[in-house]
Image 1: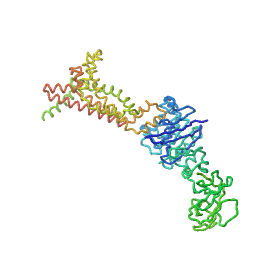
Image 2: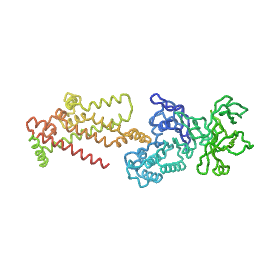
Image 3: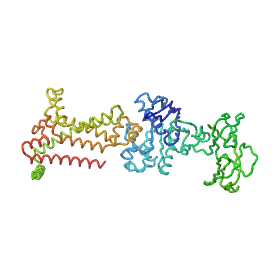
Image 4: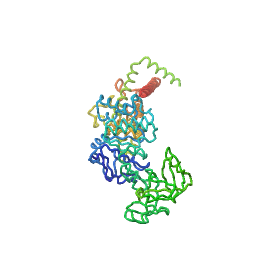
Length: 357
Length: 229
């Protein structure tokens, strides 16, 4: 069931459009990662969704209801959401009072509050901190207080704005662990803004790529990663081997793409003369010493231009008139005696090539 | 100059011997000005909070106007309130003129701009993220304003002390509205004014020293209390 939905949402400040045509939805218990570079509008969007700012155009529906209907309704809705801001914000009081705040404003009883606060202290690993002044905490601790405060009222929708940016690795993994548990146990829907693609992949069911105030693509992490809808998305999610070319021939779905003089065959709907980008995942490239017959439709000879080893893997960049990056195990690289300047063959299937405009 | 030293000695003597008239005047001054501060803060803190919290047209202008009234002459305030509460005025039926209540009202009006203006500046000093966090945590507008005020408590209390200082040290409104009636509306400042005119410079100076000492004590007590929170 859809928990939150936006329709043609837009926001501008000082006659500058910060968000345009935002259309997406979040289901109950779904983790939605909003990824995009700094300044893309992630924070602005979260603030609109948390009903802290008012959109200049378009609508937000929460549980199927228009959020613009009345102030009273907005308060009720806001009480079913919570947000953790990028910069840890704590009130100038004790850790206990900070975490208890959402229950206090909802006028919950003291007994219940105490039980819930103790539970949150336990979950976030802040036990023993309850009497500390929140302002004396480190950044990571303060962010955990903010997270505990966001979760204590058991929101239906939890929003996180780069919750782990600028934090030490221990705090990051603690916060991610707490989040993962909460998501699993409480069935809370989460919208998480992050510029860290790998964090999005680790935690999210769905990813929306936000760039320059527009959502360019939404899909599952593997969809986004394996078939990015355009070059900006591909570059942002860290896809390697993005080559530009022009479609020179077409036979049914099979196209030949001219890339820097070489011809790459691929499956695509685009037509002859279209300027396109070709994406090949490094894992899909096979290296051989000799020209072998195989079903792979693309085979190029080139010199090894660069070799780096990362753990048990070797990243090999071959210059085939265009740069091509492939990954093999370190052992294969040793057995095939790969070294700089060596001429080898790189092959990949036409179906491994992803063509975008 | 020997008068100063003499005044100082006399002030100490008046305090140490707990001169009944001086004690009574000092306590009355305290009571009237404290009432004025309490009344004014009941008005100014919530309204100042609203002005800070909401965005509306003319907010800047309104704040400028409030700040202009920081320096309103005390006699003008006295006169203004006088017009309202004198027999012929709209509130004449309440028989407030020449009562301690009238003085308290005058002082309240006098310090309202300072208290409101300083409350607004105090709240502006609070990180905007506090407001967002409060609202995001499910606070109503009123609860969020209260949270911001609590964050700014040091600065708000400083504003209250400023207001109290201006109230207890003013003479114009107390004279016009209270009438300096002995044993009823006579406060430290009106007493100083009277004793000076009578030529009792030493007593006047002694009362002045007591006035400053009172302000000092209150300031210290409040600051020490604040440090604990």
